[in-house]
Length: 100
Image 1 (cartoon, helix red, strand yellow):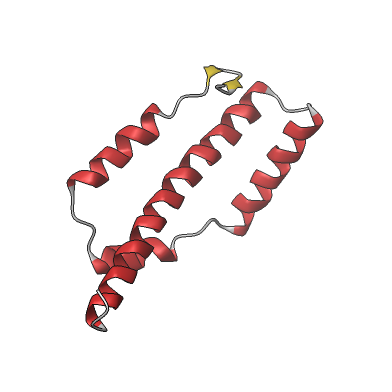
Image 2 (cartoon, one colour):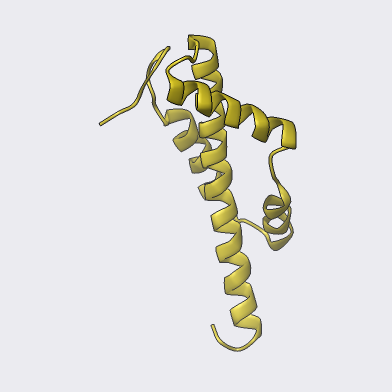
């Protein structure tokens, strides 16, 4: 089942394309540590909460729904990249401790 937004079906094509670029390059430990430091500003977190609440209430406008969709897509990419970063750093930690 695919989600529908004010601009049509929700796709992850842009997300998939961006993540494919990351698959082409080797994630380095310094970059992995930097990715793990990335986080939303408080004002962005508050905006996402506001948009999510308006969406739950059925009071969201088409423009707000597009904005919420963008937050979701960017958050998804960030989560995936941070997961890859944690995996890399964990693997390096195990190999340095003789466990990997």
